[in-house]
Length: 200
Image 1 (spheres, rainbow, N blue to C red):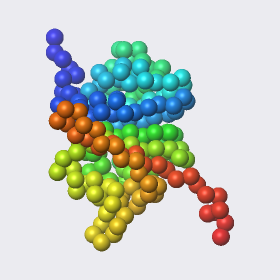
Image 2 (image 1 turned 60 degrees about the vertical axis):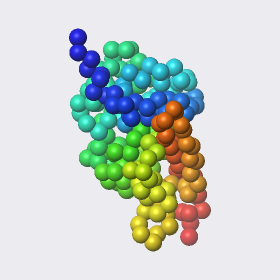
Image 3 (image 1 turned 90 degrees about the horizontal axis):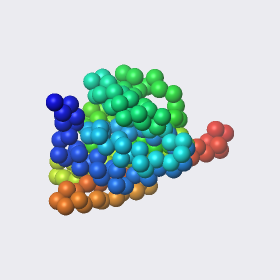
């Protein structure tokens, strides 16, 4: 019998999935979107951490993985808590505003495609005070993107991409070391809308 899930288990990504599983906490009633999971067999472990009335949207940017996720969710009968969604730049703009309390991105491949477009969409899809989390491997290859994300989006401009698209300028950064695998989890918050901004 062929293990159809093996293609979703490259070593570094499986570790990022596990880092996410270790650090994420869910609150009662939260709606959460998770994008970038490569090892879909981690879903039952995520399910064990859920509170009452949680709804988890597992996001993929390709149809093949979206179908695999949907079939896995049906097969393991966890559809009351999980749904599979296809997000890419063509359809993410059509989704309704302010749907999620947390959007988590595992890995940064998606952001490297078009960071401003994706981050702006994630901000729009978050509820007021909602959180965006990105979990990435810590290595020299990712250092430049990390700097761009947090501190300096353009030459001479001391503002990162998260702040540029509208996230609060206070970020929570957690370093996670698992044997020789080092990763960083960054959490940014959507600011509370100030009603006085509407009056001039």
